[in-house]
Image 1 (cartoon, rainbow over the protein chains, first blue to last red):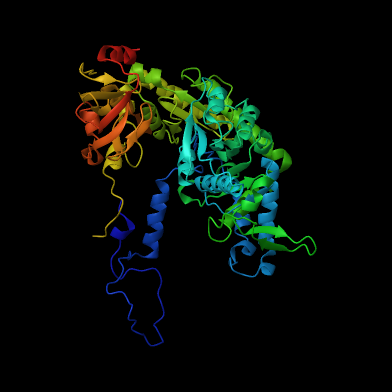
Image 2 (image 1 turned 90 degrees about the horizontal axis):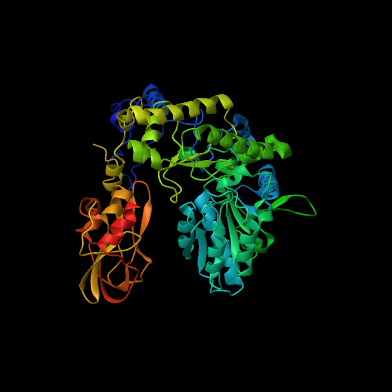
Amino acid sequence: MKLIFEKGAPGQHLTLMPECDVPEVELSCARKTAPKLPHVSETELTRHYTALAKRVHGVNDGFYPLGSCTMKYNPKINEDMAALPGFTQIHPLQPVETVQGCMEVLSTTEKLLCEITGMDAMTFQPAAGAHGEFTGLLLIKAYHTHRKDTARTKIIVPDSAHGTNPASAVMAGYTVVNIPSSDDGCVDVEALRKAVGPDTAGLMLTNPNTVGIFDKNILEITKIVHEAGGLCYYDGANLNAVMGVVRPGDMGFDVIHLNLHKTFSTPHGGGGPGAGAVGCKALLKEFLPGPVVEQCPECGLYRFAQPEHSIGRVKDFYGNFDVVVRALTYVLTLGKEGIPDAAKNAVLNANYMMKRLSEKYTMAYAGPCMHEFVMTLVDLHDTTGISAMDIAKGLLDHGIHPPTMYFPLIVHEALMIEPTETESQETMDHVCDVFLQLWDLAHTDPQALHDAPTKTPVRRLDEVGAARNPVLRYVAG
Amino acid sequence: MNFPAELKYTKDHEWLKMIDDTTGIVGITDFAQSELGDLVFINLPQEGDEVTKDESFCDVESVKAVSDVMSPVTGVVAEVNSELEDEPQMLNEDPYGAWIAKIENITEFGDLMDAADYEAMVQK
């Protein structure tokens, strides 16, 4: 397929501009050479993007069980609300008296998401999950620094964590202490007890954890960290399993990020933009990025305020505001009953698929699971030579997006499946049938799986070559 | 799978070849490279870095994951094999030739195995 830059010819363009009726002026700073922009007609342009769109796979195309990513369906009513002129025809610098509705959205969403998570305050500035982690860690750092408790230089992260956790901790200037998981995939409480001390700034954890298991020791875990003087950070990656059922705040967490683009059904993946809202308990509120929205107790008007010891901005203006509108729409659409129902259905769906696939596949951890589960294909690989990668490629030929592969790192030949609550039993049955067929194919005709995919626009890609010799920049010919 | 007899091995799949009493070179084993798969990047230590036995001093990256390389000894990095930066595949092609770092002033050794014990461990 040709790039847009390789299509068209000079003279082709989109709109017919009227003849210029004012004198042209030479600018001293004018470009010496014209920029190399595509010359295509509107017809060519729409065909180009339609062709691209046909080559991608999204939730609107089919099943997308990317574990840990919560690729749930995004209701179209979210788009209707976000497109309301009152939300789109505004400017971030316009006077607050003229954008009271938008400020009410921020305030209401903060209130509702704090209720769901057990937090006291929230910022919507961070643009995505890892950005939220970084912001949350800066809050922890500001807290310790403010108390002149500067010997706390270490963040504890379990070995099953998302790679972004240790990366964010290092970005925030911390040293990472990795602790091993116990055999059931949960935090090894004794290892944690040994790891904490006067140098512990905090712990980063997700619960349910990365292998889809709710850590039953969570109260003990957060207590150990608190008693050592550290704070507890909740990675909201897996909140979809428990939203409206249990609250991270009640588990003992002090600060949390939410991936609105996962749990709260806002656009996800390459298109985004995301939103990594960060919530915190009252003890961290004074450090939040500013400005924050508050309501005047006398006049009822919303206004911006700067938290007393704010860490400063982490993004321009108020974050991806229109994403917050979508998340609010989702929460209000589902309501008090719908939010926990969604979580319960996500858990039910995952257990349904886990049970059906257990017929042939080996589960990394005994069930039941929460919203996702991890299979280990070590035995299949040893007996047939078919790896998790080959099964993933085989799924592509059936129009199914592969699950997350080779993650978490503590499970070998891992496939991590998260169906989410928005899939029907028919869809999951079909996907399970395909998984079981591929298992049989691995035994009867492994070469067919080594050759997969065969029906996709591009065949198996050279991932090693792409990593070793990446071509990152297109140079126009 | 190859287990050269003149090397010492760690349980984390690194090898150590002593040059004199306090200097040695370190790399990853044949078993390690085959488990990791095609390596695409290496994050080398720097000359002068102090390394500690059983602690990470380097990391390697495959298409699947990033993995720590643990130091078999406590000492100081005297030299690194910077060729690996451009050609990480040497770690796959010739794991015992593709040394990662030369460590000098070795003051302490981790629990090291000889070739026979290491081979027995990975065959389990």
